[in-house]
Image 1 (tube, rainbow, N blue to C red):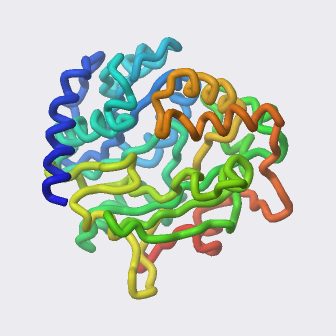
Image 2 (image 1 turned 120 degrees about the horizontal axis):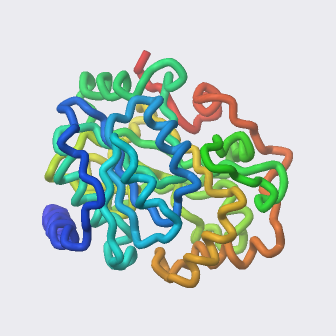
Length: 328
């Protein structure tokens, strides 16, 4: 495992040559700032709400990699004073699906900081997030000597076909996609990295109903007190050193955990799926997006009689999808 980690570090150091700064505001980062890292491509429509959401919750500085898009994402990010953005035309696939770029930015700018790593359609929910900023959570984690904080990815969806859930720039996506599956999840332990492996939910039952083992993983560890010795291995599903993946209690108790509300299942998915199938830059030659593109032609509806409408984090805790643990 130590050798794997060193190889990952060397990979990210080599990949730094692919990143060209567009606007570097990192000199403004203060010692106690919470940082956010994200890789984007043609996501301008999502960025106003994404930035607003995380600023409101206490993120102080954003580190973006823009991967060869053409919709104005790069220019929009460069206009924000609390954003640093790099661009690259290199292969997303050959950068371990963006992980190498993120590892380099975190190693360079996030050492000693709490860092949140998310996709542009993921929105972090944590205990007491309706009344406390992220810094309250990270202060408690520091005081409890906890270095990493786990979440479950919860796919949100509309009541009707997703093509009818029309998203507007700056809009809260959960105004048009407020529903989620309260159950239907499978959990195992990955023996190699000892992280949890969670699958299921609406994408599994609609897009992968004939082969649920191919459904996307829903386990993520997005919030980490970063150190130069750390690396993500597979998206934010797992890290090295392996102890960072221990975000659950093996003795049957509860550790504090959160959720990532996933705003993928809206009208933008169709165009995104077709683009990514053509590019072939995602995992398994974009097999996940191929399933989306093929089945979206049938206008599937994810909502059913067991669907729950999202209210707040306490609802997710009652359903067992996150926990405040012993944080009071």
